[in-house]
Length: 486
Image 1 (spheres, rainbow, N blue to C red):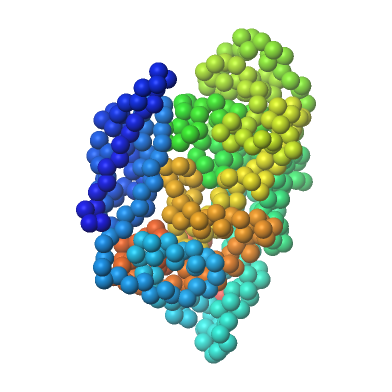
Image 2 (spheres, rainbow, N blue to C red; image 1 turned 60 degrees about the vertical axis):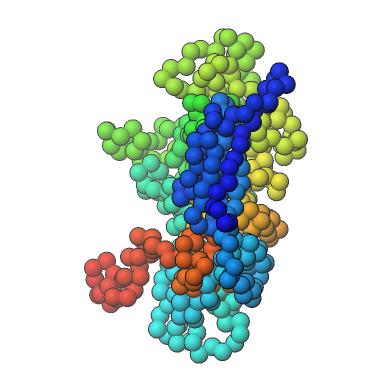
């Protein structure tokens, strides 16, 4: 500012050495719908924001990161105190955007928020009075520590991760859903390192009753669906668009989609113990299913891609535990997208990883490797979303270049801290809740009334249905339509 406008120009560098203006041919797509971009690249702002504008020409794309700050001469940064490094990184961002954070929440406001976010319950009158009578300066930190040790914390976060992993009876059957949920609960209760949690889940085999994480492969059954689900849950990435063509808003190619699917192509399922529950729904069965890995060696068809049979009705899996590319009809030989490849894959070259009997093992090692650019960020971003109402990248399952983090330095630091503390969910929750950023009031001031992205104030959240039912029952002392003592 002043002006509130900036022009982007696009130039193309061609193989004959020429450079041409493409501004009137490229497509400009702003990541913030409140910001307008004209067909020839003129960006117009009306409020402080930060965004990426994706510029596309043919199959090429590039993003431009823009920040807009108003020329508020009367703005004076008041430098609120920081409780920890989260506040230092967040307040530096707010200062640059000239957004003054709201005041600290009151004790009762903080108490209610902390109980709902950690336990899914309201504090009792006795707990409210005890907290108000506590005069120790660290009483908020002490309360957070106490809440994280309560069994209700485990219950609430079990429900949250069960939702993410879609644990339900319709496809898993009642016993499968129960043992799967119990495994998730035991993992949360013991604060199992989340990289271990992901590896156990992604490499699970055997009975869906005796080895509960194997239900991950009962819920999602085909190699392409497993690639999509795994990328969305553990990488925060939406791969579906790359199934039929190169991703229109990201660097993912169709080739990447099928090389990722190849990690899951050798799964087999023994279904002798299943009984059809609903004759109208092929997905609903009762009984135990056994997940196995086909021990078929490298498919002979790989020696002659032309011999790969025609793919029927869009199916990508072919006989021999391999994946065929629907456009080239060639078998996908390597299971790792070039866009994500490290010099080595968890101690293996991509070629070596593609030859092991269970390809999921090198994939799980690669996914949870400390240098992986997605895993830790995707997990801490989900935790941040649960506690503050919006992800640093939002939506939480849409990490891409054209949807950048509102505070990249903060997301990077959270991921590194998560890794440094052995992927502890409780550590991340404790660190976030102890920050002044988490404890800010929801009351806006003159500078942040329009801000719903940069965490300058608390954003009121709707309660999840299960939590809403519990707090209504708690307040009315009526559970399931009956008084508590009935």
